[in-house]
View 1 (tube, rainbow, N blue to C red):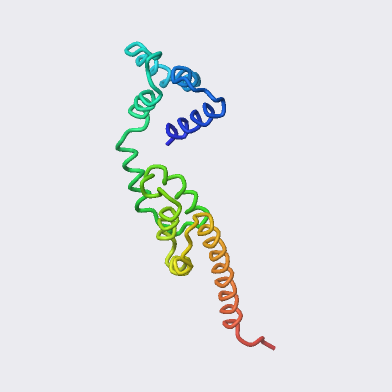
View 2 (view 1 turned 90 degrees about the horizontal axis):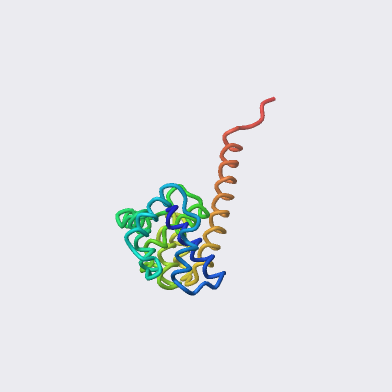
Length: 172
């Protein structure tokens, strides 16, 4: 995922810099390479003319080397099977966001993304959130966070009540 994060950062910087020519994009993208990546890039440039290479071809070569298709499939499978489990809503949402980029067809629009997120929520929360028919992802996340806080508060009060009840009458 480091390779994918690197490519995301590069593309963001290139957009901010308003670089339009693929040749310049590739030069800037490879400028920060070090050690193994620098050696790999040197072998690529010995075999291919960078001046004629498209950015898509560069990304294809980069991903072949540093982010294999089998790893991407594995991460997609992890996203498809992602459930909240013992994670907090915030942890689940972070993982959901991180892995969703590996299955973009599952989150093509706001409704699909929201439905996938809600379907992975903990059993205590999912029916309550689903019943609200939320179609906006950020709203579903916010409601889940609020519900989680409410559940935790109720659990604490319930435990305090049990402890108070179990203590029995004060001794004289």
